[in-house]
Amino acid sequence: MHTSLKCAACGRDHAVDQLQNLCTDCGKPLLVGYDLESLRSTFTPDVVRSRATRSMWRFQEVMPVEDMSQVVSLGEGQTPLLRCRDDGAFEGFSSLWVKDESFNPTGSFKARGMSAAVTRARALGATSVALPSAGNAAGAATYYAAAAGMECVLFMPEDTPPANIIESVVGGARVHLVNGLIGDCGKLVGQGRERFGWFDLSTLKEPFRIEGKKTMGYELAFDLAADGRLQLPDVVFYPTGGGTGLIGMWKAFDEMQQLGWIGSERPRMVVVQAEHCAPIVRAFEAGADSATPFENARTVASGLRVPAAIGDFLMLQVLGESDGTAVSVSDEELLNGVHEMAAGQGLYLCPEAGAVWAAAKRLRESGWLDSSERIVLFNTGSGLKYNHLFPSGELVTLDHDDPACLDILA
Ligand SMILES: Cc1ncc(COP(=O)(O)O)c(C=O)c1O
Ligand SMILES: [Zn+2]
Image (cartoon, rainbow, N blue to C red; front, side, top):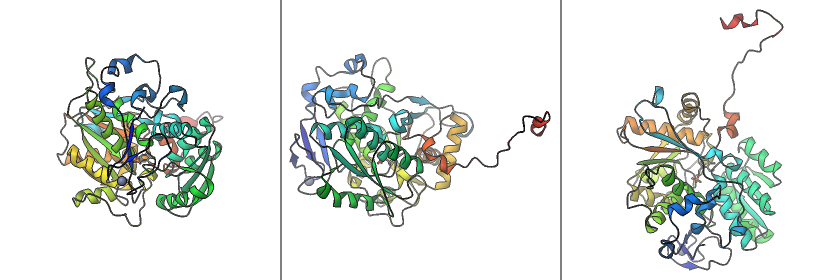
């Protein structure tokens, strides 16, 4: 259970026993703290390994929960870390891994954040949640709210993938399409929350989604453990919109060090964005400590269509502290990345993850990546949600009554 809620920018403390959004002083995100010193003797990797809990909640001591009976879980987390083959397009990558978040409930990593946020919101008495979403967060929020017996109100850009809209409608959310981008949807949540009594679950405007997403960082250390010792990869590639997972994983590494589980070693973190929506890449290249909104943002990778992110300064801090970098790729490259991973590795990635593979190739070519380095790519969601981007082309229907129907294969 957490013991503090501090503003990431001004450090002001906020009460942990009531619903909170942004810092009441400066409007920046709040970060959750734990009494890690007192956990050191009882909360160990072996304790985590010995648990029967089949979800991210096996890290319960560093999660926002007082009592496990409060948890709203659909079995999120504990996703596989898959090793890639190193032939064909993958030659030169001798230790390439995919953390496959498509195994999560509703098919994306958003399940982790929503499980944590809905758990805490319900424990503090919320009955209705609202959020803007690029797609996958909407699907996840819908199903966690349903599991919690709460109302879910969604605002999505009208060009959100049909699969995300349909899953949300089926799950009983109140779905509203908006003729704008995710920021415009967020403004509507802000306008409606007082009036209709919704609790705002927008990413980083609520402190606990990050706590769910940080479990990706804890899991990496367990996935790569050798002889029982936790280990981190050399490089992590993350498809970045709001940046919650990136900031969350960095927080997890820090917590693990304070718990005495790992040392000061850290992976280099790589932010990957789409060419026509790359505010963090642009700010990183300019050496800035915050980002300006990206004009005319567009990309088929809907999760990357975030022209302005409230956690911009935190993402840029992570890049600086980790000696990382930021890369943007074109839509053509990221779609090609999906095809290569599908045919070459047997993984149907979301286009956001097609982008990280495309970025990894780019950084390998430039020499930024070494062939022996252990590299983790995040597949943040299932490609199945994006079938609309991949028309199956001209397929021939065979007439099975025609004895010569296989002749065209010869
Ligand atoms: C599949 C997918 N990948 C990546 C992202 C970006 O995630 P984050 O907000 O943590 O940067 C999203 C967000 O919608 C997404 O749906
Ligand atoms: Zn503040």
